[in-house]
Image (cartoon, rainbow, N blue to C red; front, side):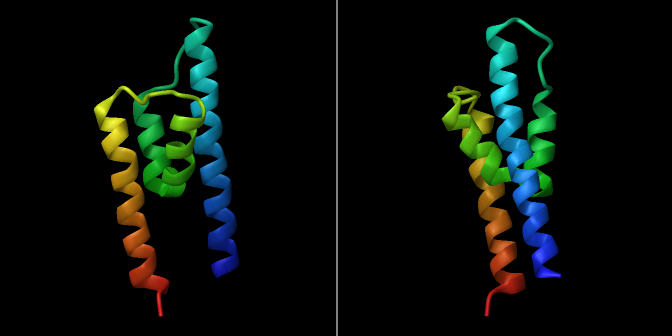
Length: 88
């Protein structure tokens, strides 16, 4: 069970990170953008760490307060739930 959950989290965080990079590329090339709700959706289903890392790796969405506050807040809530569920 834990192996599957860890694999899921790795994949969803890679998706979040990649989406930040893709959206940054699209912004620079004036292409159709990825909706902000998509980033928050990925973060809520477990990809908050990857999405947050992507924000700073690609210098993307760092001027939007709701990303700067929201992503670490989602991550903190998920970490607390993880510790309460799996912590010993």
